[in-house]
Length: 248
Image 1 (cartoon, rainbow, N blue to C red):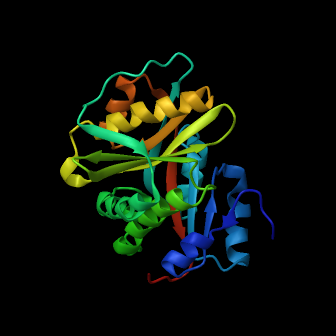
Image 2 (cartoon, rainbow, N blue to C red; image 1 turned 135 degrees about the vertical axis):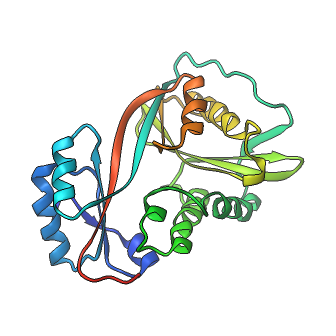
């Protein structure tokens, strides 16, 4: 069965050792198709998202064994008239170099070890493997042009203390897709500096607007972004569904 609503996920299958799939934007009418696809392809673990405004679909997913794991808020910033503010002068923010990659992976491992996203929220998933999702994603952002188009790193006294990956989605739109700040370096304006420099880069490459997503519960990121002119754009619930008896 070929479906436009759901597809197998090789990365999640390899990470968690069970056949996995993803459904990017679920509506109530395609739930039977998604479940049939999963049955025909022996899927055990499904990740599915739906718009928070689609209450009909939320209720239908709950009724069909889908469990809510997290909620993502997307923020948007129009950059055509963007004027960058200042940030702490002791920070050095520049484009990634190959020698920075091991430290980026290390920061990602540390940053996401206690993350509250959908992987860590699912008690059936090994939390160590859940963290590996993000550290391996960070590595791909550094090495695979299809994962990210640009990566910024922040250094303080020569030590790498954070990273920010950016992807160009269309000629008009860029997206901040992954960032991490070393735990001991938080509340020092590093994330804000990444947003400022990221917007600078996006304006230079010619996009008109930038998206940034974060967990609904991550009010710190939301406050930083709104203070820099971002506004709430859209939001999505992430559900998991397990098929059959699974021990992960």
